[in-house]
Image 1 (cartoon, helix red, strand yellow):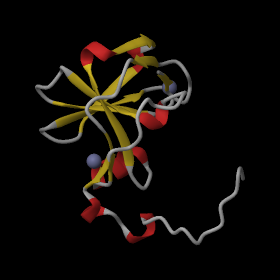
Image 2 (image 1 turned 120 degrees about the vertical axis):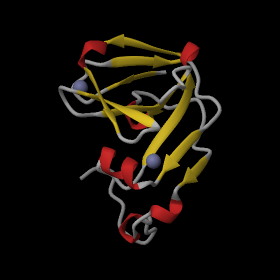
Image 3 (image 1 turned 90 degrees about the horizontal axis):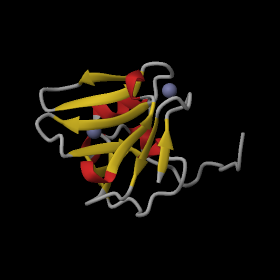
Image 4 (image 1 turned 90 degrees about the vertical axis):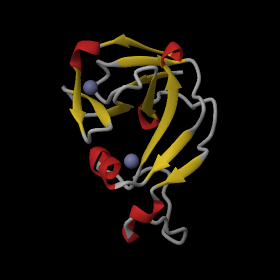
Length: 129
Ligand SMILES: [Zn+2]
Ligand SMILES: [Zn+2]
């Protein structure tokens, strides 16, 4: 599966997501994405490679446990990685350019979810604008 940032200068390839894809509702993911939650697919490093634009990657250490990666040109949130666990990377799957090979497995940090982000099935849905 191919993925890229918003400006398209950073491109990557994932062979498979394993062992899971997770919606994370924690406050750090919410702020890093500027969105209700982040969806991350875990990838073993042998199943992942950067194809282009790696020199544009910026990193931010959001806690002692993890570092987050983003595009320094367009600001796209791309990944997080636990410190000392360089054998796997969690990719922000909103940056995929095609459907992932598995669906979302679970949601975590649901107790951090603000009321506004709880999906209201009664609101109108539009195909585009
Ligand atoms: Zn970019
Ligand atoms: Zn999180």
